[in-house]
Amino acid sequence: MAINIDLLRELCLTPGAPGHEAEIRKVVLREIEPLVDSWEVDPMGNVIAIKKGKSRKKVMAAAHLDEISFIITHLDAKGFGYFHTLGGFDPKTLTAQRVIVHGKKDVIGVMGSKPIHIMTPEERQKAPKLKDYFIDFGMPGEEVKKWVSIGDVVTRERDLVVLGDCVSTKSLDNRVSVYILIETLRMLKDPAWDFYAVFTVQEEVGLRGATTSTRKINPDAGFGLDVTIANDLPGAQEHEYITLLGKGTAI
Image (cartoon, helix red, strand yellow):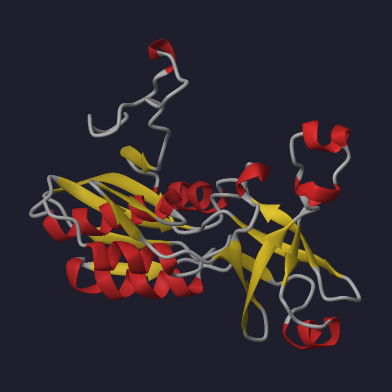
């Protein structure tokens, strides 16, 4: 099956920090409304869509809507923003990353840290830590504070590009699974059991939406759709491989 790159790009680029999934939820609802018999958004914010089957047994497939992101915790007098993570980040991936702060308006910033040129020899040997990073908005402090406040969420700013047979973009964790679940609904005809397609919230901060939706549905069987590592890379030994790129799904 050919991949709908335009839809995958839209899913990946639409913001959806944990607890702030409204925009990505709109995209999902637009796509699934004509494909299901019924749907609802529960009080937590999960999208629960049902495709009726021949039996009243229930199978649930869940993909989380939210993406790893950040939250602003401090703004200094010069307008530099400091943050806490929403989900797990490897700090060394943050240098020079463009981000979007979703404040009174969307504001672009760049992740920065102490330049290597002025680090001590000891500092150069240390792995970077999250506390070493800040967000530079390129504006004076008073201008930043017109638009950005403590508690605003931050997502990454990155387009999708095709690299050979692959794609590179932000938030493939877990928008690629959201894409797969949408396309499953598009292809699924006359299921044997009632099929519950669930697009969950707040996975990155504790599986919250998955927990509440599973208890609500109480399925007879379930699938959790998420990403893992294709570790067949330089530096990895064969006994460390988890999956191999292009060799199928990890189960």
